[in-house]
Amino acid sequence: MPFTGPSEDRLAIRELLETYADAVTRRDAETWGATWAEDAEWSLPDYPELGTTKGRPAIVAMWIEAMKAYPGIMFEAWPGSVEVSGDSAVMRSYTSEVYDQDGITMRDRGVYEDTCVKIDGKWLFKSRSFRNIHRQHAPRGV
Image 1 (cartoon, rainbow, N blue to C red):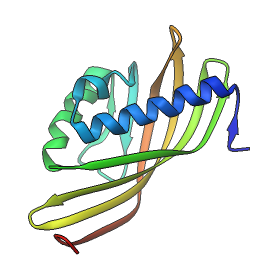
Image 2 (cartoon, rainbow, N blue to C red):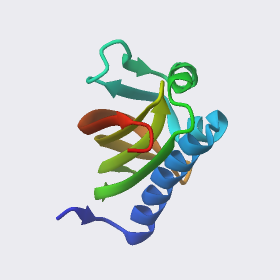
Image 3 (cartoon, helix red, strand yellow):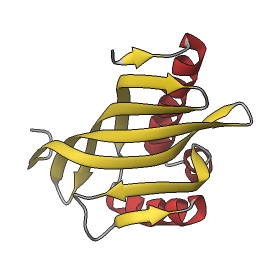
């Protein structure tokens, strides 16, 4: 079953994901960084130049640098499954991004495989691994 565990935990994990997405769109590094556990790991296998980054400070620093390539991004995310077991959970989530680069409108869609942990009553990302599903790049406005 794709959604298991206490509903209050599943809601809190969904709100973690929504906070993450909102912070990307607003380019808010402080809020975005606060969604990660201190010892988190972020893997981007479809982007070998970025690879895997470990630890919240390194993840945030990499994200700040990477976001320079995504001006005016609109980022949305939603869960496909959330399975909670005590103070840990696994989630599959989907993303949709729209942004412009060099006169081209980019529409990217992907999937994250996540693990989340509850620390001091707060859910955080322990690991996230992103893969592309679909990319559409067309002249701006098309």
